[in-house]
Image 1 (spheres, rainbow, N blue to C red):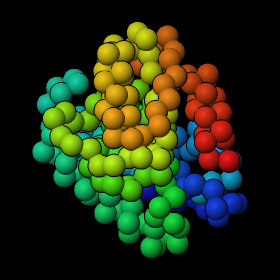
Image 2: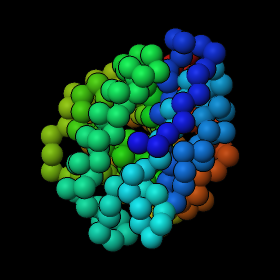
Image 3: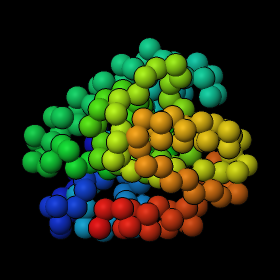
Image 4: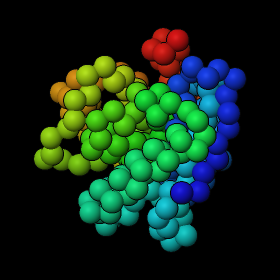
Length: 202
């Protein structure tokens, strides 16, 4: 998968794995990640799917309707890539914290839904529920931050609460931060994520 790896100054800090939103690239979230954890190594990945020329991490059938078969395939592809990247770059596979926005948050959520120990934690900006009707792996001790919009037209507050309940039901420690700027990723939301990260991992 096309990606960027930047070595951090603290080898013990969690490695941040970055997943952009629809139409983004692997460069989009680098400044945000530096704000969250200046000393961490960064692994920023570009989605392998194109929708009208825009990179995404999996296909969808319509707005808000995921292609589940493709989601499952792409989630495994991404999990395998993270295994390989850990060997290639020499970082601890068990020390990854995802940072995703929109479509990128959905693929990070899908990793949590499908693979035990896939992530040490996750910062999910405006995620949806990746899949329904499946059993989740044990997520005990996995902290998750969800940034959400009270007036998000793509991801309703009810969907955010459903995702929180599913993750918490599997044992994750979930924090939800609410904003009123629709589906936008705001400075105040990033600052809240950075504060949460420092409180949780430092």
